[in-house]
Image 1 (tube, rainbow, N blue to C red):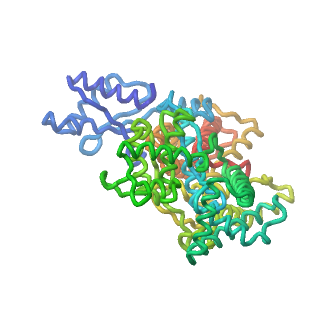
Image 2: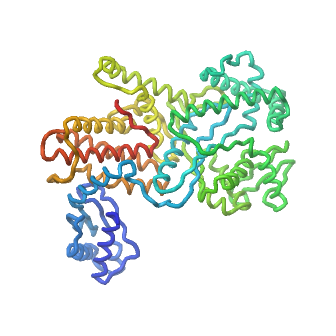
Image 3: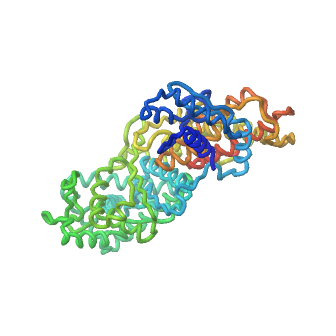
Length: 575
């Protein structure tokens, strides 16, 4: 039984003694730590129905709790109009520190999704197009949610759905055909290959919009890509697709993510057409001017085309086939799709159509939309070629980290400090991911590189630095043979102790509400509390309090590393 369950049990016992009963007893954290560790409004909830003064009822409940107080409770008192505030004992916090240091990387995990298999689809870049900053958003959110759900007991599978057929492919191939002389001779020159594909796609897109002649040529290429009917186009397609996918894998490695399943539009095209046509006869879809549409307005949505006049499946049709394919292939209990808000309305139409065809699968699918990652210059477009790609954002941030670490690198050369070669990459990824995860997924975010790299406040590198600093304290203690222990209890409970025990509750809530921002906000508060503690207290010194403070520091490191892992952020060895 965890501490919340124990406190609720105490309240229920007190209510029974007063011949009262509550359908639900809720606990929350007081607004300020000085007001206790947990608070309940049970007296306020019951007083109205009983026609009693809530503060008087709260006093009666407190009196009953005090008669049978458990060791974990140091004090319980009435506050404000009738809140009941619980203060936990020093022995409880000491026990929790020992528990954290025992559980280590599993501290904070829970079992709310035990026995469930959950499939998450995210990132979804399109071959032949840039891995843009929106894909970074999807990747950061999807990876964090995957880890949160995994830490909540589920078997998690990660999927990546990539558009390797469609008009964008035809535009890119047309651009390649017109600029074959510029094709990189060295296929291993990743930078040159990616730049070439970007230029080709931008050229094809501009020509498609320029006149009907170019548009017709690109539409013809599109049909040949689907049919695999032209050897030259097949060769260019296969090469460009391979280049793109290899490039994406390099980025996934940098971002610390992997995928168990890869789904491609090319594999779903035939199934999509068949699925839609089968349901025309059932009245779910309707033929209109040679195309096949779904009348979304019948459900308060809008009409969308699922098969074009040319007989080709649209994104909507392929998305419908994908939904079925996921459940046939992976057999999840639940499927989550993370995409940009831009397609939220389109996705509603797809899922409404899915409800008519396979209602059980549709009911087990959830769409989570995220905002855009904006730069000071605004939103970028891969269509025009004026794009800051996800890769360039990462590399630019790594470069800025290296500049900031220049002084540290000089010290390293002198042997005064050792910074791992991968540290700039770890710090850059932390800066980017934290900027994306610090607020709810639905909001747009303006990425400010300098703020994101700050070591003094609300940033990923600040969290990393706080953790590395604490680890250095533990190394110092180890060198001085000072070991952590919770036998000598301090005279007062530190703020950081109160925050550490909240971590499992934060993780459980963040997973339940699909909200990585809860973890980000908590870690900033925790890091700030430790840094205040570090500034005021001696830790690795020969004093009676040292073992307890070392145990506290160790618990902080374990919790921070676990929280950073949930955000998809690595902890550097040094900074």
